Image (cartoon, rainbow, N blue to C red; front, side):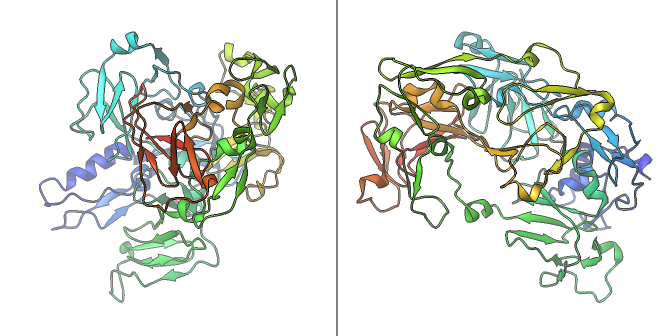
Length: 554
């Protein structure tokens, strides 16, 4: 059956939408992403507009020694088809490995340079359709003005930039001449369906009967999976069909359970709800407010890097404020880094700065603030083409450059680690999707449930004190990008800045306020600014956890 499945996820979504054309006043709900990528076909009954169920290929009785992707079957050792590999360029050199049961794809990983360093002012990154990393960087206002400009969701883009429509979370577009922002659907030749690669990255889970977990109603790619266990129970409160003997095609199978439409599955996580809504596969939704309920959602990496001490706690999980001696008692004749103070000519151990591609750092006198001077390290791998098909790079904790590479059959002998549906090999860096400030190295015996005590897992230390001392200790505030760990840049006060009062009560303790230039802000207050970056991103700055404000780029 699998050999006959040739429709891609994009074609299925388009076909699904066309089923309802002219038949209903309202469009049908977009199907969950897993149905499209697993080759499931919508079944529309006579007289109905939208499908009540899908017909899917058998997923749990596959040959455990083979891999499956996009309707194709791969024996052990076979490489992913070139057309599929091109679409998933951020996971290169994929091949089917039967070192585990069931067999799974093993892929290399790529660290793009633009994700590891802030974009310079008046610079943009340009991408090609199937490229993972930026193909080119264009800098300078004169060069940017010569490029085609596009507008989407009240933001300005330049030719070659990627654009992500707010109302279409599973689509992305490229800014090109003639881009039409009136539609980002199938009719726009510059917009494309996001491919999650579920069978590529979660083939083993699919074969074990696991069901996807999506974040809120933005159902593009799953954020995790729920696998069957002996403690699973059926929750019948939400049952839709009241027939005593429902059709088997209108039921969902999950492990040992059979669920009627509307039934739920018990969950240990109160923020995750799993239901059978459109058979034959149940799926789960994680509440959008779960992260704010469970912990502080204010970026705090700047405080942690400066070794500021948290004071008090709030119901949202955030500290009331931080105590930062390097800010409140700063001595301009000294240098500060990672909670330590350095006298003039005093050196920083290379082990402290090697992860920032720096060495031989020492504190030198400067006006108006003492600063570090360091030697920049260029890694050998930056200057040579790398064979991702046959090799992988290995790293040591908190290092800039790789410690070496392993190729061919020797690579297949390395220990493997699994983290958030991704497979890594010994020595590779592993990053968390929901915690950009934590990194682990794949080592033999890696235990995903013990990362808090694993010596090869560590919190990110940001390097802004080494390179941005004038902004950090000259009155600037950190600017973060969404889903980034360290500040992207620092914003200095402007004479045009003014305060927009929030709904909170004015503080009686000055330590519970943020100072910014000549302004004093209470928690909840924000700046009245109309500022955009060179890439057209809007900036919002507010006082959330004193003593520093912070800004977010949309």
